[in-house]
Length: 152
Image 1 (spheres, rainbow, N blue to C red):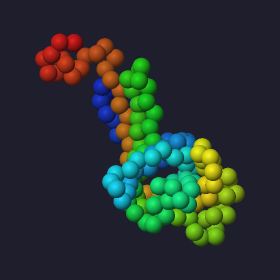
Image 2: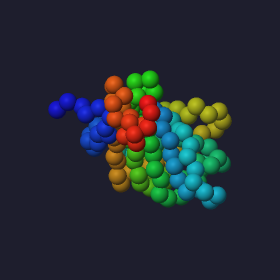
Image 3: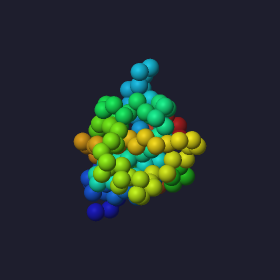
Image 4: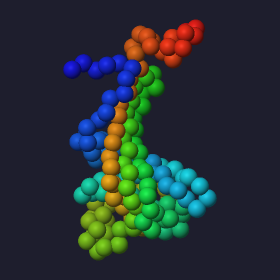
């Protein structure tokens, strides 16, 4: 089946996990004490969990206490007007079990970009994973202005 340009296409669950497993940078979103927060993190996928390291004293340390979170990765080609995104929703928690910590430290991943001590592993336990891709029409047909009857 040919791709329908200018449309969103749902990614399969398998495609979403493949992209999550291949990625290294994402954004985690949660409701912080002073309102919605979204921060970038380096991450790795281990046994169906999304893991990242942070400081025990920074804003991401809030996620050591289980709370609802969303995690998103994407790839965008602005010039080609196409891209995709994958979002995982679930609960955060600190990695505290010895077996989890041994496994996480053994891989030395994810390696944080930020300086300083980053010894707190936060895990996201996804309950849903979904994604989609989009591509704009190649010839500009179907642009917002054309659909509204405006000038192009």
